[in-house]
Length: 159
DNA sequence: GCCAACGTTGGC
DNA sequence: GCCAACGTTGGC
Image 1 (cartoon, rainbow, N blue to C red):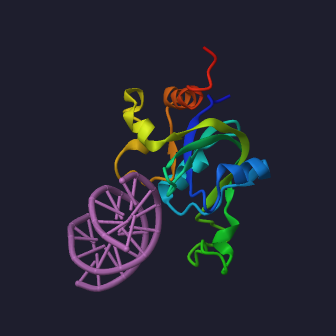
Image 2 (image 1 turned 30 degrees about the horizontal axis):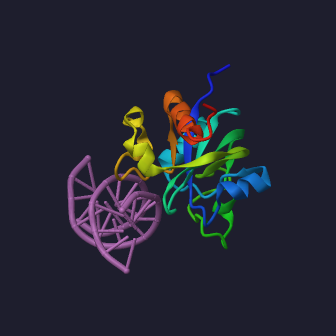
């Protein structure tokens, strides 16, 4: 059994937020149209943990946690002409774009803004805080993952 | 294989 | 709304 891995996935809350996922309990993560991001999704295993990041938000930041519950399979929106994610060059017998299913784990007790991540020396190497890092699906070190959760519980911790 | 033009992401 | 940082496309 492979070791559990950790990831961060970005979503615009206006389109799909942690609250949407909380309501749906489980959903597919469609619309990834970047090869590196796709490759990361294909590397995911059931049980891998994912930081749910709100991009293009005010402020942007980590809003929750979800868990991979189905490994990569073809993203159906690439074959749907009416979808904004339609890709005429993708073939049914050789799909270009893939997606995973995730299940809701929690909405963080406290939202962790990007600026907070940036200010934390423990997260200096974390990919998401790098300037110009547009990658929408990215790996996260276990230590970084745990640290973000710690930040999210900082003020609710019993002292 | 290079690289200019163009499109997109996403913070600010 | 601006624009920097990337990724992709396509001519050569």
